[in-house]
Amino acid sequence: MLTIIIDTIVILFLLWNATLIGYRDKNLTPLVPDETKVFSEKAKSILLTKEGNRKAIILIHGFPSTPALYAYSAKRFFDAGWDVYAPLIPTFGSDPAEFADTTFTQWFNYLCTYYEKLRTTYPTLHVLGTSMGGLLTLKLGEKYCNTPLEPDKIVTIAAPVVYNSLRDKVITDRRFYIMRTVALFTPSIGAKVVDGNPTSDDGNEEWVGYGGLFVRAGMSLVHAMKEVRKNLGSITCPLFAIQDVNDGTVPFKNLGIIQRENGSRDFRKLETTMGKFKHKRHALLLYRSIQQSLTDTIIEFLDDKERQNGQT
Image 1 (cartoon, rainbow, N blue to C red):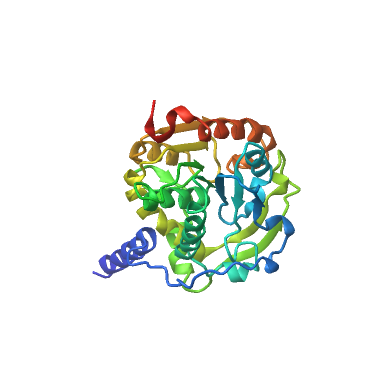
Image 2 (tube, rainbow, N blue to C red):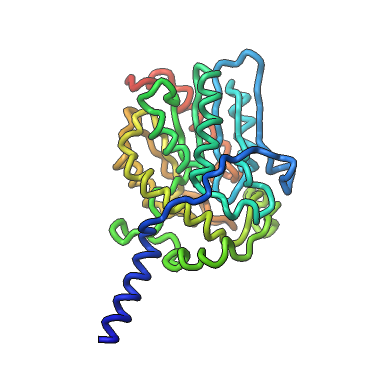
């Protein structure tokens, strides 16, 4: 009898952690931008505009990253004719302790306000996101596609829509199975700022963000994936999904899930295959070996007049 009780407790413990049943984001306070607190000038928002321009692109950074990963591509998009907005999501780039207790709901609500303002300003507006930024981009598409505020086109790079799933045979990090319990006691473990990575190569030396484990913020991010995946079919606007087959951060199977379950009237995907580098082949637009050709490909997709609005 005691064995049965212990086994039941263990099973319930694992289910409570793994499924996040009953979880809700508690911190819903609207985020207010304040870039005077950033730990590096490179972490600040990238804003490139030209008076009279009628088209723009929003670039959304990842977790726990900053707009620095778009330093190259932002200039390329601007030179190609778009106004560029790569916002630093508030609390990202600040003291790690300030960021550690924020939630996906706060990040998304901030971006909705940011997006809606630009959507009413520009006749043409695209959105591109990397990693967590890709997840946020998908959710923006789910909210605004088939509405008057629909984005013209969206692009995702290494977007996660599933974290650990036995059904999908996707395991991103086994530590997650106890993280909900850990989060009861601490918001983060070993949190620190990272302003450059000298042990890396191929442009990843310029990565700017955080190191360590952000337990509570990460749990909020993982919880959001389930709803975004469930609503992928509501994305009807043109979608270009990109990921490297050897991505060491987000399992590559995520790209296949996005491909199968989205409802875009013009869906394209790109599977890149990078060589061996001292990085995880994840933040693709940061890497010198691929950023030029990949940016060219994205510009071609965004500027392809013949396939706009589902035309062939």
